[in-house]
Image (cartoon, rainbow, N blue to C red; front, side, top):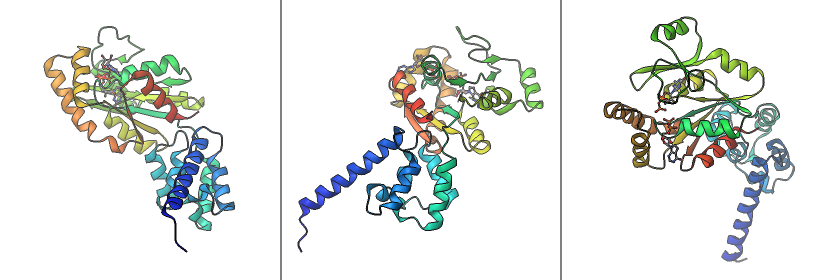
Length: 285
Ligand SMILES: Nc1nc2c(ncn2[C@@H]2O[C@H](COP(=O)(O)OP(=O)(O)O)[C@@H](O)[C@H]2O)c(=O)[nH]1
Ligand SMILES: Nc1ncnc2c1ncn2[C@@H]1O[C@H](COP(=O)(O)OP(=O)(O)O)[C@@H](O)[C@H]1O
């Protein structure tokens, strides 16, 4: 029987479209990942069955690629596996996880190089997505023009910061740009999480790594510039640092750009509103 290549290509295109539709429905919350998995196991030849497990988890809002990868490691399921190809015990473990775990990410870290637009995007989120709360970090750096104590940061002295450290008051903290210290108050974050709301932490790479280790359910988002030149343009354009400080910050930025693969998701900040919508879309509801 000769295989007609055109018919084969047509069938492959149909299968790809069917899988894309399944992922879209999960991302749009029209179907749960658990319903898709059950359909895959009921109908072995279906589009659901041919989805890779990574595709299925990645389609769940609030589960970035890294969190999907870490979850499959924990479930001892190879990322190459298709949903329909899982063994009985793997199905049981996946069914259990899908039934309980994929809660919306409620602790979101937004990190990225200086002047990429973290503060601007976070401000847009604050204004347009009021259900997402924001933690106010402590910092020993001086306020910039227009920055309000208690809103942008809690501006404190070194001695006050030391007191906070002695009282274990921070869920994470770091010395950034080899100069000032910044820390996220534990009580503030816990209070938000206890109410079931989501909280956005705008912190540096060191802080993001601490959160990843201490709170693995957090969603880590890296905000990237469209290009290095644009990043430099924004830093100079902001006009809040002198030449020496800009040089120091750009040196940190190079290190941070090299670490973006440690994050669950990367959002490029070309347009503030679009970047904010993408971050919020990752959080899930
Ligand atoms: N680890 C940590 N980093 C923070 C915290 N608050 C702000 N940062 C980071 O400190 C760095 C310096 O922030 P800032 O002085 O506002 O300058 P910017 O980077 O140019 O916005 C940025 O990467 C912020 O994300 C915090 O509570 N913890
Ligand atoms: N998408 C964007 N396009 C152009 N300029 C931007 C964009 N996002 C932010 N900016 C500008 O870049 C500068 C740095 O933004 P900021 O939010 O202070 O960065 P960060 O908090 O990451 O250090 C600011 O002048 C801001 O207005």
